[in-house]
Length: 369
Image 1: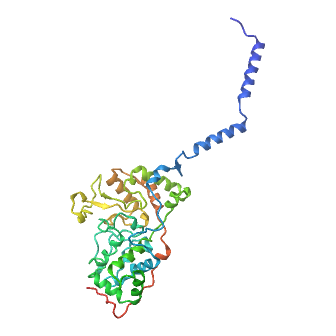
Image 2: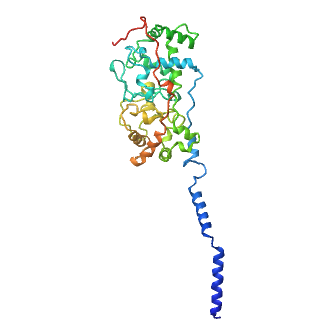
Image 3: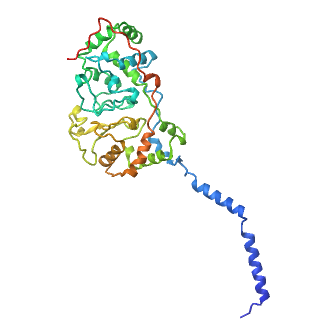
């Protein structure tokens, strides 16, 4: 075997060092390479928007400017008339309750009560849902017994527990007793020779169809990644991953279907059988219209019986009884943060108390009986 001399060893070492020096990058180049790598790693993956999968946002839709109806076309005069009627307590038997009493538009369309007080202090059996964005729903009331807000507007006025007017004739007599209403109705409904109960409902519904509350989430859906903070974006991801969008999706984030309350685990309160009370179909037992989650952080207490005050607790109950999942406080918190991003802003001019026509000696007097 050939022996390596000291000279050859020195020459070999020099060649190795030179080769290493030629392949090593300067410190500045190292830093540049590292920065580029880190930036690429930190960038959201393709198809993501603010950290949320862009494709998953397709199940939602931003709110429209209003909730127009071809069957009940809107005019400024009709909306203004509906605004007055919505606030007018003289449409109740004892002149002490208006639509706004239970659906306060200055408080996100609710009264904050588990169930609302009506004529002579009577309480209805269900929580009063918000009127905000309600015209987007497939139907009205928890059991869907009214097909739209036009039909819904008639119900409470004649309900003996709510506004308790004895009949439509009494409503029409009340409206006809005030010249300002007569003039306004004639302008909005020129084919009718006097105010009618049906036209009253059309005007109230036209007003309600303007109660749209755009929120930060709508801005996010339209492309503003900064509209939701990090906690809300995480909550949105968790909301989707948990399965909440099975029922809560679409433009109203709910309101688009009926669902059994207690789908996986029986609901504790079985006294109210929901839609079954309307259809008498056994398949509709414990079926309720899925509520919209828009403004949900401001519209408690929750569920048809108003039995739950805390939004986090409501989220946990839904996860357990509808999805079969147990959520602790840590998992619930970001979902609640996302739900808070659904709090919107109502049109300021439509949430103020309007000036109402003056009563006359022909206006029926309050009746506490």
